Length: 455
Image (cartoon, helix red, strand yellow):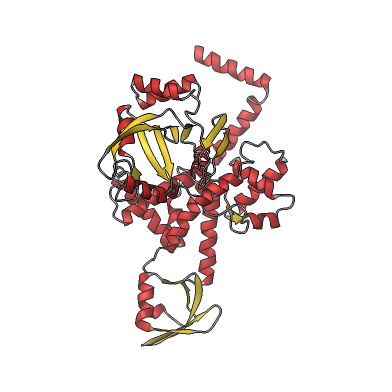
């Protein structure tokens, strides 16, 4: 942040003058100490693009990983290693008072505030908590905190946070390290290649890197990595390692990825169906555990089902009806399945990123309504929520996908039919063509209108 941005940030945080002076003194100061490598850790420095300087780390599996995440976290504005020390006081296991100067690992400025951060492994914290119970303590939810550090931070109106390796996602961190050379790199990728990749991903959302490389000519893996790093295509970096081309899914943007993820969650939820016994005729097709089954015989005590591949199975008829009622088994002819899937696909393809973002928001509220989580939707007007629930249920009944019912219907709003009679519209078009599309004629008509206004 420059000086003006820093002043604006301080005003937003409503910091006291002495706290602003403290932060202002930390920002330009060099690290208060040099880190050292020991038997069980590897120290080093990381060249931070965000900070424009090197950042020290004392552990290549905890602090270095934390640096990678802060480097690419948009909420983190600035971070400094080994900030100036401050004195903390606490009791050891024997009840003896201890006081000494402590140097946290980082001082971090986020969009939500400033804090000192201390990073350690859970194993190390367990050991230190026994030796210094007054310094490191664990909550019932498994989070760690440092009362003496928090006391000092609170005196400045700031925070002190104890972070652990359990909070570092290994797949996400490894992907960030893999993409490090592509972040901020202006690769000379031809525009035709970029358009090919974007068009393929838009037409085939959720396609894998391997499928795209095999189907689109002239595209290299490096092109895809560059577009991921520059956010021209979206990949869930928490899901799978980028080197596994056959598993990494590509999306046009995060909204599309989230939308398809919500649809998958919805379809995995059990749906109750009340089926009349008269409709269960031989050769009826069912969908069970993502596989198609055909009803061979519905007996009084035993029901026989034939899978799409393999030997038939027999179920107790009472158990078969329990599966139907719970929604584990649903009647689904192949024609209907293909038709509904195609309709859902067309609706999803026609939706913009803004439409998907709205549908994602509505989906969470509707699911909260179904689950009785009133705190989540308490600020939504009841009439609006009822309308969304109705749209969800209608789409679920029609397409077996309630999510698409929550997509905005802005394209269908209003009267799209001509409002003027056809003859009048033709006459108006002719008048415009003859009198206004020719400059000389237009001036004549304008003078006529001006004379009419004067009269």
